[in-house]
Amino acid sequence: MRRAWFFILIGVACLILALTTGRDLFYNMAYLIGLVLVLSLIWTWTSVTSVRIARRTRARRSSVGKLAEESFTVTNTGFLPKVWLEVHDHSTLPSHHVSQVMNALAPKRSRHWAVRTICRRRGQFTLGPLTLTTGDPLGLFKITRELEATSSIVIYPAMIPIPSFIPPLGQLPGGDAVRQRTHYITTNVSGVRDYEPGDSFSRIHWRSTARRGRLIVKEFELDPTADIWLFLDMHRQVHHSLPFPEPEFGDPWLAILRGRKRAEIELDPATEEYTVTIAASVTQHFVHSNRAVGMVTYGQAREVLQPDRGHRQLTKILEALAVIRAEGQIPLAQVLLTEGERLGRGVTLVVVTPSLERNWVAASRDLVRRGVRIVAVVIDPEGFGGPGDAAQVVAELHTSRVPAYLVRKGDDLGRALSQQRVLGRGPTGSAVLPA
Image: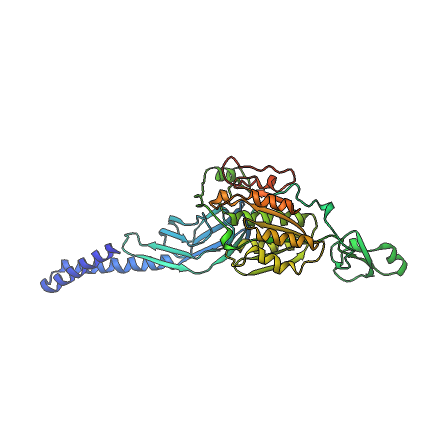
């Protein structure tokens, strides 16, 4: 724009000289400079308005360690070439580098490019808006156009495969037969009824169909097994973190070039991220074992998801875990006392916490006396800049007959959460997700 003002000042000077001297040379220079300024402004305005951008996101859901993929198409819909065009992206997804500068875009031609980003942070992020910037061939004017269209993408926490987890599925305590109908096919047939549109043909009871002369289907009941409840400690005062490392583009990008959909990346050194990742992994473990899983957590607000089975329940829990933050004001002991009153006998409770306070251990002991089975996953805050040693809390839990896992910064979470677990520090000092 400074160059444009320089031309404007020269044109004004030529016009003044032309009016004072009456010489044709100064008139011609003033007309020429004015014509150049007008044509350059028109060129710039048409260049920024005659552009169409198509943005396509492959999936609106991903998880930590996987890829978020987008493709872009910029089309010149005008009759003038684009000398240069800058596309600047304002997405909040970390390390999502979309911005491009292209030149020599001919009329009625398009330019394509794709962006692959390794998801390193869980949460809900905004894709867009975009800002277009272009100018004229002489560089006199520069015009910016805002494209306000946005979309969102949700990044789920990482889910680590767990070979085995206490309690073993065969030892889950159960009560009497649960008289609850379900649309899942189980081993418990409760009766038969007439066929209705939408029923699967695999549910047809052929003997009853042949005897009655019309289609008869079987009805099923849930297995008489205990529900699994996840209690996440999101109390702000018990969570600690170290400075997050800057993303590295070496090894993960080599993994992408080799066609792999998941790269080996490191969890952020924060007890909050370990808590959420452990909860997601345990949920996946039990849902894949056809168990009913629910969740209770007090983060930004009270979040209670009733136990259910299937992939839909896994998605609901992951949606909640993706956006939850350690901003709770209520300690874990109070959460156990408040929400534990609604739990019946035989329920299995999985508590995930970095807290070293003893009052939640006492609350867990009271629930065990009432017939609630508790499994604790204690995250040692010492490796995250926190005080104390979690080994004493784990020892007190064992004394109270509460099985407990101890997870430290750098542990392989898949092994640390299995029965044949190894407690110790990883070689890199941070948790590594398997490829």
